[in-house]
Image (cartoon, rainbow, N blue to C red; front, side):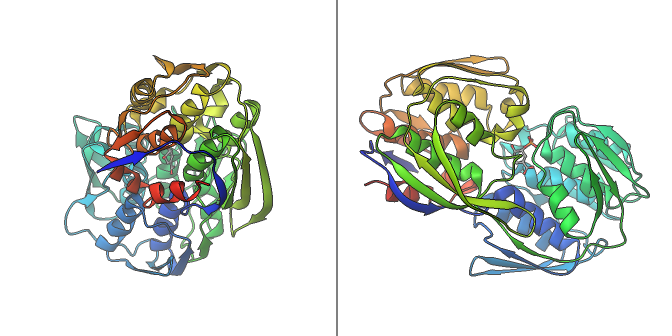
Amino acid sequence: MNITMTPAARLSGEISVPGDKSISHRAIMLGAISRGVTRVKGFPANQDCMSTIKAFEQMGIDIRSGNGEVLVHGKGLRGLSAPSGAIDAGNSGTTARLLSGILAGQGFESIVDGDASLRKRPMRRVIEPLSMMGAEITARDGGFLPLHISGGKLRGIEYTLPVASAQVKSAILLALLYADGPGTIHQPVASRDHTELMLKQFGCNIDVSQHSITLTPVPELYGQDITVPGDISSAAFFITAALLVPGSYIRITNVGINPTRTGILDVYRRMGASIGIENVRNTEAEPVADIIVYSSNLKGTVIEGYDIPRLIDEIPVIALAATQAKGTTVIRDAKELKVKESDRIKTVVEMLKGFGADITATDDGMVIKGPANLNGCMAASTMDHRIAMTAAVAGLVARGETVIAGAEWADISFPGYFEEINKLRS
Ligand code: S3P
């Protein structure tokens, strides 16, 4: 599907974004393997989260949705039944990897598969630690979906994460729930900690220090109420749009501001952005707030090291912001971009070059010189939701018309995105 974007004169108003995708996957997964009912409020109706729901329905879990609420009737840690066929994780890396952790602990065999994009993404990073724990996993070409998982008795391990990946960390934590004793994960660079927070809420024995997490198995987890905050990774597009379109002022209500996710706010402030945080409060396990954004003159910056996991999914749209900033922006230590829904070093650079940006790919990031005048163009989503959504924001600040081809990929994380962004025009 093609969508045409035209330049915006000004953006204003109040908007909310769909519930956080990372938290929502975890709510369904933990709900399914807990005793009793888990009530998830603010669950987003996106394709990735639907993949997780379908996976657990296939394993006998009753999941009901309506009115933005999802009820998961958990069957306890050992209540899942063998799925009839392969589980299809669709486009969702979080579904495939976290689920592998749970499946590694089951006494039945299972197959996890995904779409063409997910079949290209590396799975060895979860196969290795789960095999060390005792699971038998075979993969296509040694490291790609489909995975055949034969689980059962697992042992606790001590494991140092070779990449700062919340998906790998979470897969191991979920498998440790089924282990014969405690296990410890060392993470040299911290990544999002939603699994740790939610496991604690569900009654798990988990001990978190700055660089290590120790989980001691408990007999059962117990169903909880979860209020999912708005997804800062979705808010990122509106934040950037308001910063870049002159004279704009917007409020995004009820956004999750877990510090492991707010790298984009820190980097934008460093670049000179005027961003306010109001109404800070807590849901059951996560902090939320309203985010206020005024259009701002930005300057270039360096984004590297510990910044990267705190804004990894926002790099496409941050790169767009950098094209409008004065001076040079360098993004490095971000090799992980190559194994996202697309090779995002390549796809971001090619897409922004199409608009006329001065941007160069490097081995672990990109270098962007600004400010550049952007011209509307034909931008391909490259079957990557965040590329499609970034191109739409570029279309607001570029001269002339922008056509986004494959715009339907936005539904992976944000159905209705284009309508929402157009509502802010004033
Ligand atoms: C996610 C972790 C990140 C992120 C992804 C969601 C999660 O991936 O890019 O969109 O929910 O744990 P990695 O763990 O591969 O860095």
